Image 1: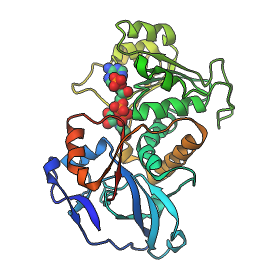
Image 2: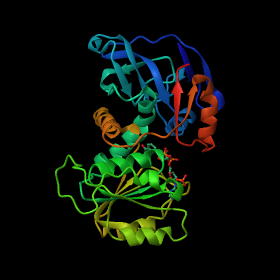
Image 3: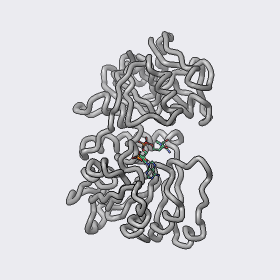
Image 4: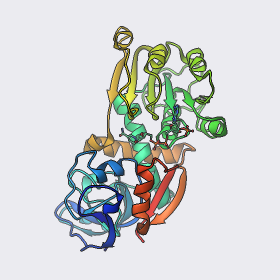
Length: 341
Ligand SMILES: NC(=O)c1ccc[n+]([C@@H]2O[C@H](COP(=O)([O-])OP(=O)(O)OC[C@H]3O[C@@H](n4cnc5c(N)ncnc54)[C@H](OP(=O)(O)O)[C@@H]3O)[C@@H](O)[C@H]2O)c1
């Protein structure tokens, strides 16, 4: 099969594209004929070794895949012929998705709604799963709460905005003026919203934006949110911790998914005295159950909200090395779909 793979960790120059033997699924596993995969920021950390994880060589890159089950080990035969998706290949000892075929344990395979295209789902899984885990597993979102999303126009940010609004949160998001309308359109005012069935406040499901490039952006955020943010997710990792402390409600949750290059000073005294908690996570450590829950959340997001991943490029495996060069240069805009051609 054709694949993009490594024989050693390192820079993008370590990536080879060529033929590898087709793997055989063992008991409880399937062989997925990959129809679409994607490029995730974490791929660079796995390739370089910055995120230490099992990478048996030759190691196929890529995390997310949508495809058709073409072979099955004992106990997975019922899945033969089905169109399914996965979001956790290419780390922790599992081979990746940037290949024409990939072995997937059945507990990491998810049913796919018929109406959602392969490319859309492949591009959606990583950011939407991250958003789901941030808001629900780590943020413990309740309808009627107020959520600040920093980077609302980004990949994870857009999914956070749409999911929080869908669940009946009042959302404030940072986004440049050029992106503001698109981000506000992710709101869900007046919808029934929530699975939790709790009280809905005025403003539930609405999205307000603040342009983070405005010189008075911090003051705008203080005015909108001062002391009232129940959940803050900063996808840029750049929000001033002192400002975050100004915004947090008592018992608020700060969910950390990204960090600035140099360690920030966290005003712990101002946080603990308001019962504010800090929850960091990386999706690479999510359990099988959490990932399955997040995949269901992704399908719901695609079916029930206007959010779609912003696909900016669709490329074949031959582009693998240049994609990783772009990742290393922080020059990837939007979502890139990778086809096994
Ligand atoms: N922990 C995890 O499991 C996990 C999973 C997935 C992703 N991540 C991380 O999450 C981060 C976001 O990923 P992504 O794919 O969503 O990236 P992205 O699409 O580039 O989004 C980042 C957003 O941050 C905004 N931004 C940049 N600087 C800002 C600032 N100073 N103030 C406010 N907003 C600012 C950008 O807006 P402008 O460009 O308009 O300024 C952009 O909308 C990355 O660091 C990624 O590695 C973590």
